[in-house]
Image (cartoon, rainbow, N blue to C red; front, side, top):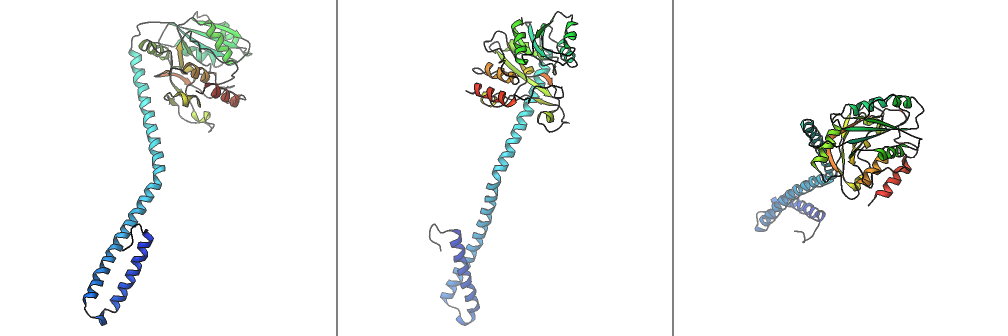
Length: 336
């Protein structure tokens, strides 16, 4: 028998030698005659054959285990993907549940909500955005539209607005962040919401915002879900994807690397010290705002659709010439 600690290879060599001896004895058995020594050798080699059979089974089992261990990383990855899908579906179901509840809920207070909407040279799209605010089921709002130096028919369109809840301002092309700051400086509401001129506010969003702040008086900032019309355009994979709901969980360290919310999904109480936009940023001002507002206290993740995000509008700011510089600037100043 092999010494303690011998390898499988040592055992295999010993078995081969013993089996060779057994075959030689079997050939010469007729001349040897029956003897106690021959019987002992027979029993010994019979045991050797059994041990060899057991070793082959062990080796086969070890090979199966090795294959299983090798497959574990891929299996673990698939389990992780499935867990993410289950969590995503759970959050989507939560969005549906809360929106159904808010639709029938009665809010006890009616604070004024100021909606900030900057625009530039999108006369064809702006009426759709304005109409989505007009269609809100919550009635106590004001819409502050800042024309950031349009050269199309936007000034004429705004001049024809007679609704007193809509107030318009003119900026001089300093950028979308500066335009939003103009609106914030004139906002009268207790709560602030946002909308871009190429997107559409969900009809129940402002009611959901008021309800959420009413339910959670300690909360100062919240974000909701949004629906993207065609994710393939965002990922630069062409176009043709079906609309998709986005409502990711909040983690400040993860959000410091990648944005999770469009500006139309963010709402906050008025007068917060960090509630202004960095005018040095051409894009990603919404991401920077969310990070600064939630540096110390995480926001409330409100399971309700805030807006419908479109990807086919002309003159989009996303992925523009300052993308890399703005990305680096936001990440650098918001890491903690």
